[in-house]
Image (tube, rainbow, N blue to C red; front, side):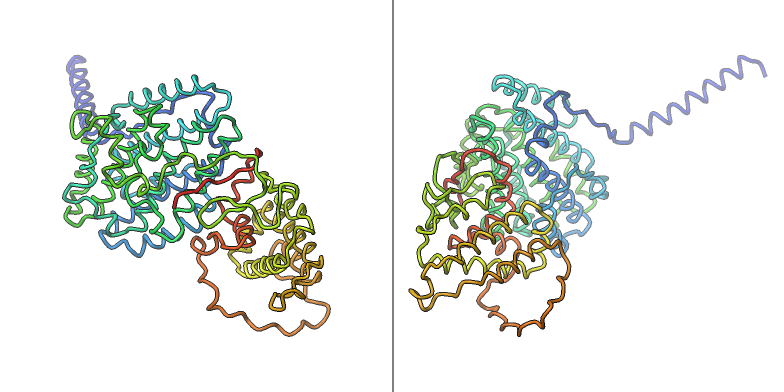
Length: 532
């Protein structure tokens, strides 16, 4: 065969193979990613605010598992979602992952269905986190930080394939399509959890704009996280009733960076739209992927279904007001020079009985939590405080009898140390003659020093059974009436603020959002009416 003929055939075969390869590649969706904007500010939020930053890893899992269950269960996801809700609120959010979650592993079938949606969410979440990083970098001045956030927004929008538009979208896309609102009606509790996520995601920006010092900013972040935890109590009553809008929840951030704020609202709107598409039985299962793509086109188009910035700012009023969205994330905490205080059921701070400015106030450094009790002057203790101390010890006993509470306290060295100090302090105070029993015949008898020593030892033992007593154990007292105690639930009972000051003290010890206060090393903080 002549060389020229052989070469021609070889080139033709190569061209054919290349054509097939190109056609196959064109028929497949490109699964490329864009690297986050580089800079020394990256990861500062995780480094300086780990307890808040790690929550977003749990949020990512929550979104992913929700979509996978909705898509694979085809309208019969109630049982599975209830299990996932319990896992999220009692485990994963309490102990959030240290590293980011690979969502495609959690939602493999949904990721195949809606890879573009997954990538768009990931890209917007990168912007979320990088804005936190910019705020958390104390090396930046206010001017540098604001300029950086605008640069981050420009960089986000440069990825036209996966960026949401920065033009405010009409709420009709979320609420007025034929499949709209199906998810929130079918699964109100899980929907409320997602909206609480979104409230925190935008609400966390406000403390950085309100705080003038690093200590104030840290206090604000802790108060904002505490507000998030309060939303999870008694679900779905205290959860947002309407999708939180950045313009309402975070007005200062929205005024400073309106483009980013609009992007986040469009992102959160799309979260709701996809949940509705996956839930609605009016959309055939095989058509759900196409419907998601059509909605993504709308959320990326800056010319359709848009409203003005002024209309966007007023939208919260048309939707029922900011209170139904979870409330504003402004003025949640106020740094004051105040005497020791406690958190009431309404979230406000009040002075603890018997504690004066001279008697050793509550240090905001939670590592010194035992000091207020030791600083209480004996003269300031009224007869009723002996009963209060007894009630505190009784509550401590009941808590430690619960294996879940005991495991959590034992796993946290700071909490264990604080509880031990508290028991030492209450024991010393109760051994002082307060006249409570004589002056009040109906008062509960204070525990003996021996009882206190026993409970202190219980706190110090890591876990497992204690040594058998040297002497035969005394007859076990009658079991208290269980009807007098509320049923155990980790987010409606264990973490609920008590009415009396001693219950509040214990709640401050064990409530996860309150424990985060131990990272603040500033002046005492007073919560100023956390909205319900």
